[in-house]
Amino acid sequence: MNLKSIENIVSLSKRRGFIFQSSEIYGGLGSTWDYGPLGVEMKRKIKNHWWHEMVTSRDNIVGMDAAILMHPNVWEASGHVSNFHDPMVDCKNCNARYRADHVNLDKPCTRCGIKDWTEPRQFNLMFKTSIGPVVDSGEIAYLRPETAQGIFVNYANVQTTSRQKLPFGIAQLGKAFRNEITTGNFLFRTREFEQMEMEFFVHPDDTGKWLEYWSNERLNWFKSLGVSEDKLRLRPHGDDELAHYSSACYDIEYEFPFGWSELEGIADRGTFDLDQHNEHSGKKQQYFDPQTNSRYVPAVVEASAGVDRAFLTCLVDAYTEEEVRGEKRTVLKLSPKIAPITCAVFPLVKKDGQPEKAQKIVKDIRKEFSAFFDMGGSIGKRYRRQDEAGTPFGITVDHDTMEDDTVTLRNRDTMEQIRIPAESVVRALRDKIESLTER
Ligand code: ATP
Figure 1 (spheres, rainbow, N blue to C red):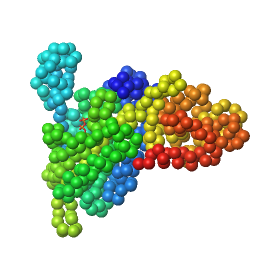
Figure 2 (cartoon, rainbow, N blue to C red):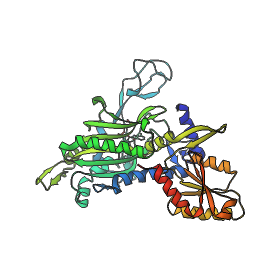
Figure 3 (spheres, rainbow, N blue to C red):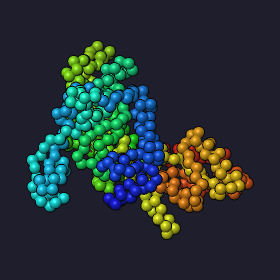
């Protein structure tokens, strides 16, 4: 797969209703994307899958949902007001602006070919706004640049009300905003995005072991979405890469057509955040250990992933162009766990009771899975549309169905077709999905 494939994926995403450019009829807003009917289903499935894996399937992690707007002191305490900067350089000749760590300052500007750089300057990535009707005298507010702080400031509320004992986690899913200078690569780096974050509170002596544990758990989660194992890796951060709050960190990376890039960071944040909030709010952020009868500030191991990057990874990994009987076939080989539509149902012809029979099957399937009814165009065209939508299964109702009550079940990837009784469609789908998604 090469960079051209990203263009093909962008165009398939639009053609099939996964992703549209934001405000397209006004010429679009740079690096901002809207999820269409298929995209929103797939994104929701990824989020639900994360929530189930991290919260509902575990005893020791609880969820929460904080407001996007928070007290401005939160961002003073977290270090984002003073530290959340990218050093930027401008080309004095053509005014192009780059992240200083993304260009070689000993070489000329790649845009105009002239070497005339400004000194690196700091640029804060937080979006600033003001609360109240009068802009000048209003209180400053920031759109949160990460969801994690909503968890830290609620640590005491959640711990006491949920009666969790250490080690335990708090998970949250929601929008975050960063005024990124260099955006691009489709959904990979945008200014508005969604995060899936889990902060795991542990005894300060235990962070090393939990960092290892969560790094592996999280890597396995990406594998469980069907992402190719040989394109995923866990990379420890070098000392020079660590964020201001972190003493050790792993990145989960995927090999995109534009190179290995981060999907999720798993970091040992130590007691940094709770210490900071302790100091800035004057409210104690501690844990009372009933076993030792002592109080201390818990340390944190964080797993922070981007929903949109997970989505892009699944799309890129699933995108396949192949030749079938001399014709090009484009197919998204998405796992049934996250495919927007699980099964499409097609009456072969628009008469003889076939549409009604197909609709009845759709109704049955929808009790458990998502289904889509389509009777427009030739059967070949209908299959191809669903291949591009990533629909793993197709059921065709034909003349024989009306005689012997059997239907054809087609597998998207192998294109194998088998005949099964109409009444066993849901059971057959259940079995096939189970065998395809064993993890
Ligand atoms: P990068 O170095 O790629 O900018 P980061 O190290 O700043 O990322 P974190 O602050 O660790 O990112 O954020 C955690 C996760 O949130 C990232 O792994 C990524 O999946 C997601 N994320 C961060 N920034 C963006 C963005 N601008 N667009 C989309 N997703 C993002």
